Length: 295
Picture 1: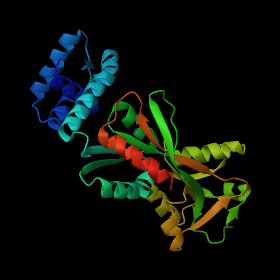
Picture 2: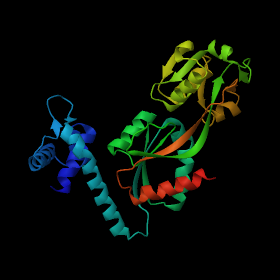
Picture 3: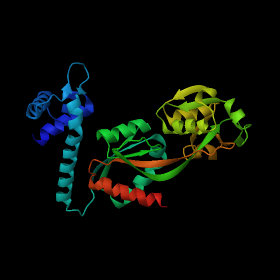
Picture 4: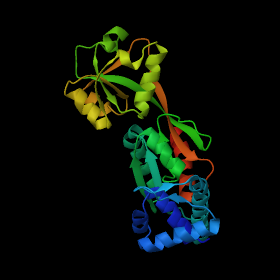
């Protein structure tokens, strides 16, 4: 077993395709196929189910994936530490983040981190909370930032920010504090299922004994910007992070409201895989986030 075989295996698992994996690691497809075949022979198991168009991990392959990613990470850490002798933070950092922290917290975080470590390159992935968690579990991101805790024994969460959710509308006649009965009479624009904002809102309503089917859902959309534009056009009201609508409120494009007897807040968390070693860059970034959250 060598690292070329392991690298080929990890990338086929990631892209679910021999050809895409070959492109990613600059090898020919036959070479990647040969690496996988040799690895399967050496391990004595079949790692991929090749019976359908999309390549899938077998049960044995899924078990081996964690070990393969760990081996790759350990190699990369060793190379980084030996080349820099622990005196310089350089390299690549992949961050997966849900919408609100990606757009309204991460820019400032990375700006101040860059001021300290200008030789770090970033790959930023904006996804739903569920997708961010999946990327951390699969090893496709070093660090995740989410607005909701998805429980898994392999994950570690640390709170970095307290976020307030508010109702937004284009209706200037709505009161600043909306009673529940008036709220239930409004048309709603909601984020898609899997969004932390939506999940927190649903849980808050549930605490008042109100299920989601009691509200009038005009549309479900897959982006924060779409929510803001729908509400600005007068299509309905929505619930969003206060920091996400700040500019719209200040310029008078939208109105901000709270719900009577209901204060909706949520934590913003950094999430990492506790079974995999972090690179020196990722470790330093986590230290930086802790400093940011204390301010």
